[in-house]
Length: 602
View (cartoon, rainbow, N blue to C red):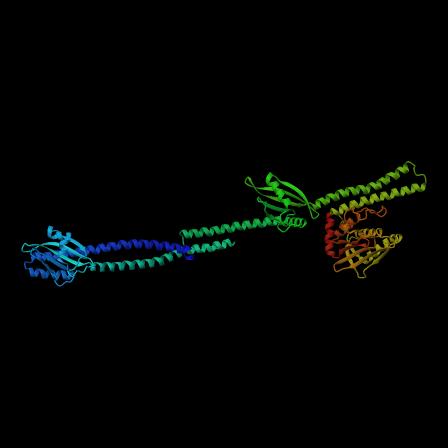
């Protein structure tokens, strides 16, 4: 079946059918022509033979000789003769079993006209022999009027069976049929060869097209001729090159678009007109995963809120935006319609994570509120005590001295707060100057412990040192590093109750030094730990002013440590104490690079 469906089979069958029809028509025409040709030829020969005999009969005066001559001529041409005169009739061969009876010549109108009207006549039909047997083969009879030498008139009938004609026709048919068979065989071979030659490039094009369908556009079809098939092959190769160029361009554009989408900080979603999600980038996938997790949706499920937003965009034809809170993060979605000519074919949504912006806005507002709060209290105290002194409300010198001391302490507090704010602002802006030098960690740790030993003793706190005996050096700014440890140890002492312990530990590591300050104080609640390094953040909201700092110390610590390319961590449990850990690298070359950078910024 596959052969008949192929171009080779169809073309071969078409050519073979066309040639067969032509040969059939030609065979029929040739058979009719040769059959008529043989009949006419036999008729002419029979008439010629009859004329020859008649010529001898008219010239010969002796009847016996004329009959013998007629018998000889008719026998030489495989025919029989009947001579009919006024006085009788004579057969050239009296013993011929197939001789026709005399009555047949008189009964046939055509043959009878030879005797009656003296006209030549030729006819062929079946006749009954004297024995009464019907001859199933036809006889051709030629009748010619005769005028004998003695003036007697008669007729000569020369007849012969048509077997000779049929034999000649059969031979002609065999030749025609044999020639037609040979022609059909040759046509079959030629048609198969021609169709195969024509379809071979088509099969190659089919193979090349299948390869192109798989994405291989480098496949070429060999051009073997300059006819239409060759031109088609050239056009196919040209199309393959053009497709390859276009596909490469599209792939480059697609890759560029994919890289742009994946590198965008915002999420991108595209929707079709039917609401199907077409393209997403990693940021959008993060948003969708968080949405599905929060709402318990299965994978590949689309948020209902996005569908509602898409319906609004498709209905109004204008962009819409909304904000959602998912898994503690704030997302703003801006959806815009996409147009195909004048019709909306979909929409694109941009998802922006506004968590940091909202957090910064909150921190800014909290910062302003905290600064106002921190300044308002000392200023109010300054104003109140100053008015008391000016209005002579205070009578004794001791009271005046006490109020003046409070005013002095609050002014120092305001100055310290302002200085720390300015210092922190410079650090966060990157404008920090580090004067680095090589620091001997054991010596530095000894100095810090001695510095706070008196303060710790006054508050009945045991300040201990766990200093590694192994030599350790780092390349850092000693003043800034002392500021870090001062803030940490001061915080530990202020938040540790009497008879508590504060431990200052140094640990030499492979690529740096770890400094730890551990206390046995009240600890930090778990929910407050992520915010301890924020400005003005205070874990214990109920502390008295004598215990409270400015709320900027730990933020300053973090900035100084990061400026040294280090890390600061905190581990704490409520009621079990707190441990602050500072890690500083000891790579002098790396530290020198950071020093040059910060000096350039400063």
